[in-house]
Length: 390
Image (tube, rainbow, N blue to C red; front, side, top):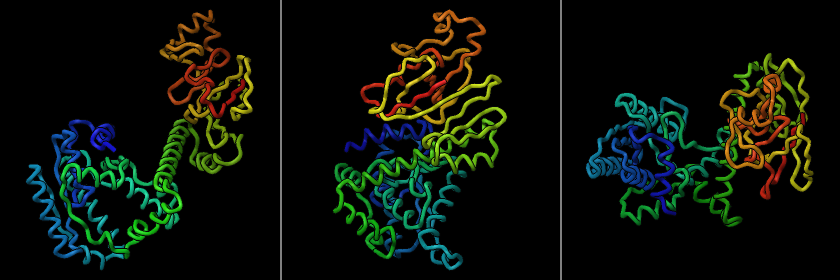
């Protein structure tokens, strides 16, 4: 894998060029590769932060010395702190790893705030994600735990999540990077190391693509969580109460057709998705169904829309048209303003005021009773069809 180009593309989505980045550098392979990539990416305002937990005696001190020399080599500011981690453990019931983690991120946040940095960059990679998945699985973690670490959360960025440890090793060899080996990484006393050394290799003997399958599962869970958060925000904005929202979240993956009403909107659960529409004074009867492409039959009724299910973003919304709205009329390639479309249809003002739009995110997918959007039509690649009837 060509890391440099892919890294630049992904990193540019996380931060702005003028952002100040604090790089967490332990001295190990992962953080050394991250630092080198950031340097080559052209970030002008970088600094290093290092924590010495004094858990490995002379080895920890040598790590600190190595990182300080590295800061001189790159001509970067460095912020370094030593912790009496074992003494901290005596005050807490937490594991030594959790105590070290809390000390680390507390210190990172202090430096970030005091020195006015924008983000802390940490070097977690794809293999860390997989190990985290199994750790949280064994601890009965929910969706949040099993979806793993996010590339960006508040002031923390993780630019290496798409790369494996092997990718990083290859990069270090190619660029002649020196780094420190943490001897504790070979100690099976820690659960993470047991998973790394035993469980994952065992899974790979059963299926060579085990790692990629786990990562795909985690991505699916991230998408599920994102959808749930979008649903929550939409429901709050549409006036649903906290009790209603809890009930919707409980039933959304159950049977279809459950309806919930706020003063202004109606929410309907459908095949694990949530459809929301504005309540108008006029009664609107709506029927929704999803069929596999094998069972699909073309319906030319203008009050029926047949859309590519997998191109849609849920929840779908129903609204009146607004000035500036546009869509891509079925059979056309270019965008067209709705106002121009209505002129072509020779609609009166009263007729235009009664028109409703079915929307997926910001896109209009159907001008109800007239035309669907060409981008959501049924194609040779379509697997599932959403059928909406009014």
